[in-house]
Length: 453
View 1 (cartoon, rainbow, N blue to C red):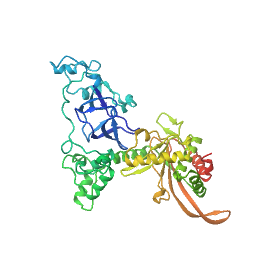
View 2 (tube, helix red, strand yellow):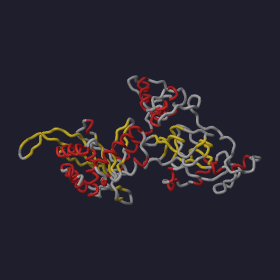
View 3 (cartoon, one colour):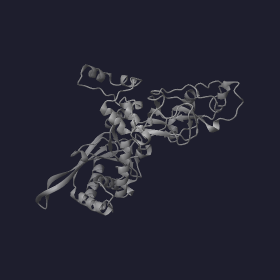
View 4 (tube, rainbow, N blue to C red):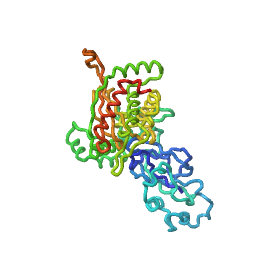
């Protein structure tokens, strides 16, 4: 037997919600099969099997939460089913578990009871927890899987659908069985859910009632009393984002540095670069990411993480890029951005942003950031201050490029200006250090040949 454990799918994940089971007790599982969709604080992700076998038991139902390292299902692996004496004593089928339990007759609940004893310290399993780990090799009972554990909508069949579509459907109370998918092979995709939301698709009659009951009773009471107010329960993504941002503002003493730069050289350089790289394109944000990474390499005191015991200096520069998605914000990470060319950063940014909007980012694509860039210029925002993304020590907020009169050689002439705001954790670095970093960043942006030198 192998216990399938709740994996750590992101560096900030503490627990996960079972979005939907793709296999049911008694189903055969091949290596690489998607067993379950798990909702984290950042996305809904597919969990693939690392071993072949038969799914024997589901321990955590759809919509329920489990901590990292907790067992969520039991897989009877092919190697675990050896020919034992035929079944005169059903209880003895569970007996060959000498490494973890000496009690012979506890087949009914081996995974839920044995787990705390054998995995008392889930932190030590932080790395392997992304795989289904064997807790104890036992003889697989050839009998059919016990106790089907997860209620399913309708007649138990599920139309094919993407993880993002399933999450949106659950958040908006839409029964997938009532929809026709427009994707390949009739697969239900995000566009189908959005269309159903706009058309007011009916919610399923079964069970999404408990979640609203646990959330914001005062708001729902206000909505009930006031027809002009609609109470929309927070989904998990928004709840976790709210908690982490509140913790960031409360625990990290922020200070802010503002700087305006002359954007004309940057725009001219970008135009020449795009001519040379056609048909590839480089955005202003790609140049800002590259310039930030270069400045971080030269000012390592900003590329740090504060802990209560140490100041951690990161030897590599990984820049997170804030991407707006339907449910909020995701921050995919450009690894080793200081070592990559601008064109490569542009390609990778577009790829990661597309995955973020489709809900297909992998855990490793959202973890490990040492600094972040948040750009709202495309929304017409002149300037703003961003909240630091823990455990990073700083984040750069980028506004839009504005046409403004500027003074050159004693003359007032048309110019283009770009506002930058650096939010800094005062525990990790001080004002002078951050100011030197921002000054170097401004120099790079106003002399963009230095970015690619």
